[in-house]
Image 1 (cartoon, rainbow, N blue to C red):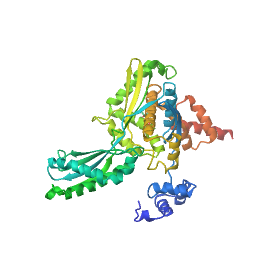
Image 2 (spheres, protein in one colour):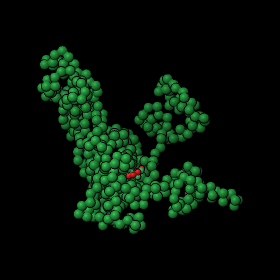
Image 3 (cartoon, rainbow, N blue to C red):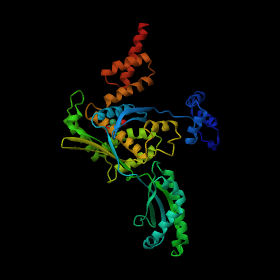
Image 4 (cartoon, protein in one colour):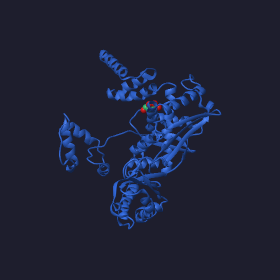
Length: 445
Ligand code: MEV
């Protein structure tokens, strides 16, 4: 494999040519293929290019919608960006199912975000604690210029605590800072404040008359937000009398049996990490799709969700169920640090449209919408798993991918869709079907 120095200094076409010529059998074809995915509008393409570095082209993903979501009495059509077949269909079918059973409910439990300044200091903890009230005042005062706008919007710094971690690591302390970032996800705001805090801390200790010798030296290890935001939390839930659930799998599964199996499935995900991982993956199928469609940070949301799922030391299901007094209830508690202003939310043209489609929600509304889609997604997945099994619906959806892969014509697609209505879809069965029908055509000709 070739390497290169100064790649980032090449022009975009220079980069594309270098990659095409050095890693592909047919550089011309690859270069023209990559170029064919450029946006027709140069200005728009430049916006996409500038999101990241060394951009060669655009990587397409389907942008779909799941309509008819009723959340807290309001109807939404929800944009979803996802490549996995069945996910949007599952969300839409869940939305339809719950629309006639009271809809989805969501409530915000908190919106607090967290950042940390990690530092080392050689001295007695008592002395640091004693000086901390003055330090805290300095931190607030000397970062006031950075926090002014956020304070005007109703947010800013909520609290600053000094955490002694020396029992775990020699000389290690933290400033643990809580923030309210209103409608922004707040990463840049938080990180700017924390970096300033690092400087203030060093200057404060260096110039404090109470500090002598080594006590004047603070080593800032790093200053960064925590993507674990358990206090930026939303709950989404559905509930209805068991008999209102109806029957499943063509009447084979009664409402009572369904509720029993569903409840057990969620309890299994709560006690078994192998199942919990797959169960939560089903939730993130929905969550990630909306997080992506609104240009939020899906890595942050995922990382946080998984940590939260393991908050008591074992990785568990993010959803819970209860069956009490004949009422079936399913809920999802999930931390969700997302924004509806700042970042790419207004720069990415489709993210902007996604937010418009959702009625330009506040960050709290978006937290509710995203959590609801996660809940809808897992409801559909566990419903299939505990009734018909997942493959029937999944492979039906996947049929189109297989047909595209085998370059089926429109006529063949229509025939295959008809043929596989009552048959099991697999790559082999679809290939055989196409081979057979193609042979028939050759013989007939
Ligand atoms: C597939 O993408 C997601 C599921 O595996 C989720 C689950 O098992 O609950 C169907």
